Length: 191
Image (cartoon, rainbow, N blue to C red; front, side, top):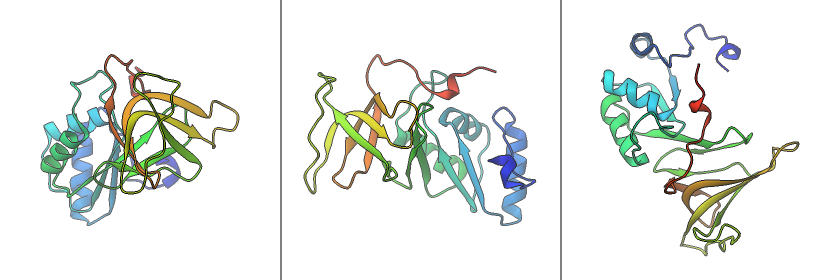
């Protein structure tokens, strides 16, 4: 995506916080619109090191500490990033390496999947028990299962270890990992 944009100021800055800081300052001074996407632990590492007032920047965290930091709630992460980076809100992405689709949250941790991706909840004590769809003006709590129809030639169904809440319109909220679950995610890869 960075190469396809053909934007000379786009880049990958995982281990070069100083370069990212200088690039953000440069772009902010020029009133350029910026989208800063990062895994949660990397954004927190950056925000701990640098405090800024980003007026033209959208921040999107892609979830998880992946064993690299103590787990924080999404609310704690967003509050810290807002305070340290001077943004009004932080957006989120929810997806997995095994899936081709992602769900996005513009605010308040409510995710909206594309129409070809469905979220179902299973009972916390019985993995084979799918919970009923919530009635209007209510929500249901359980463990997140995902059906992603864009996965035509691979597994289209994932049973996660994420606790969540689903709403009647198909949107959902991730409440965190269930206790004693395995660490997961592409950010576990080492270079």
